[in-house]
Structure formats: C-alpha cells, structure tokens
Length: 201
Image (cartoon, rainbow, N blue to C red; front, side):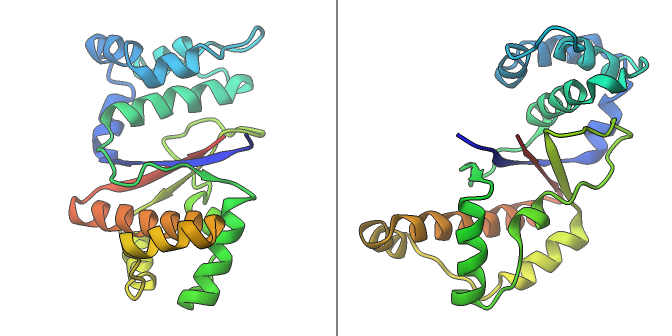
C-alpha cells in the first residue's frame, strides 16, 4: 500500500478558533465523524489515544509529546470536519506516483518541481508536537497557492486526453490525473480564500 498524500481545503481561522475552544458539541461531533473513527480504530497500546489527543486539542490540555502522531491524527479529523469538499480527492502514492508526476511536469509541461516537497513542506502548525515519522504534513497559504497557480497556468488536461492515456499508458494517465487534480485544488482554494492542508501516512 505504501504512503499516500491527501489534501483538505480549510479556513485556518476556523480551525484556530476550534483548538482550545472547550466546545463540547464540536468535540462530540468530531468523535462521531468517519475520519475520527478511522484513526481511533488504529490506536495502539502505550500511546495516547486519538480521543484523548482530540480532547487535549479542543479543551486546551497539555500535550503528551511522546505520542505526537496521535495529535496529528486528531488534527486531521478536525481538518476533515471543517474542510470543504475538493473536486480532486484521489490520494497520491508517495515514492511511486510522485516520481511520475515530477517527471511529466518537467518533460511535458516545463515545470520543474518535486510535488511531494511542495505539498508536504512540514511548516509548523498550531504548535502541534513534532512527529518522528508519520504522519507528515504541509500547509500552502495564499502566496504559495498563487505561485503554484502561475506555474500551472499553461497546463491543460482534458477528460478525453485522460481517456486516451488510460488505453495507452496507465501510469502516465495516473500522473496526469493527479497533476490536473492538484491544479484544480489550488484554484478552488484561491477562489474560496482557503488554505490547502496536505497530509501523508
């Protein structure tokens, strides 16, 4: 299966207000979400549970930094709860699909970029504890999105082109689809004044 990159479009101000808000209704709503259920089902002995990490975040309790991953999984659940639905939801496989994306961005569109480094820039966020391994994350603010939008402005990938590529070269079609998705997600965030958060695990 490997590691996969996925993204959420969020209003960071809303999330900032949620963290430390002591909002019991919000806490209960996130506990009932599918995303929280996914991560909490993977809790393991010896670490802070995802539920406890979420409680610490919402109710402004001290973090247990040795369980940093739990806080990031809880934060992903918060981001999913507040996030807007992106048109592109395909998860990008790290170290496999990203290699094809980087190759075709440069050879076919003249854009030299390491897409994984762009999306997963590891900028500090809300004083969340630093993880030793996974998940990793990235945050793209308006200035970053404007730069990406400029880099992608001459990229046009149609449904017809993707259909033809699917018959000829599935790996290239996969890369092209992810390039188009990334461009659309950037545009969506700019049009709606949102921040693009990406995660990988």
